[in-house]
Image (cartoon, rainbow, N blue to C red; front, top):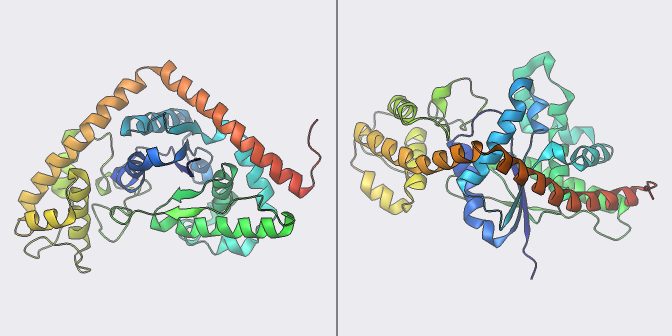
Length: 335
């Protein structure tokens, strides 16, 4: 029986952090044997905000290496670079032409990021969800692992599918409507400086996040300085204590312990003792990943061969979907 397919990706914009790892990549690793997985480095999305051309290619290879270092297994998964498959950009244009403008201007992330960029906001930022839809739909993904903040984008993808199939499908489902795959615990890892805000690469403060490749010294410093509160004892699920909730969740996920076990272990701890425990656990959890990453990055030809094979496999699937879409739209296809 054919396995259901998953498509997901991460932008090559700086270091991956614990939010990326615990909220996305580790989940991919744990469930990858159950699915036919396509994991891409979404470098086309990386230029929707100002970026550094000098580091884009290097960051792209680094993300691919981190996929492997975190445990993505090529037996179950295909790893490729988004821009290496031209069908992503082509399908995005075709979908643009059937997507109402108001669907995009209503996107919460666009409103938030547009406020930050002001008059310099680019069309690409507005159009980001359509490109995301193209990424997903090219591979006929059954499910898409997303955080809570991406659910609105996935709903837009489903709306685009319904609109396209209704207008051009002639009774057939040309495009497949994907379902979100959201993990309850750890789906949204919060900032170390503000437990009400998501951990993000775009935060100007390095103190706000722990990067997967941070040194033990940096991890120690960041956890020692992270925001806490003055309430005695540590407990989950108190809406008045977002930092406590976030740090206990980090410990639970990195240690592999159950929530009840962590709650009992940490209930009477002081912050100083807990921070030492969290620091040691974080360093130990990230060390094997860091060692594997440096090993992969030292063998450039190996990484390039994986990305080349991934592109070839992705192309076969993507081009067929693109052909189906263009046929439905009435295009004359090359002979």
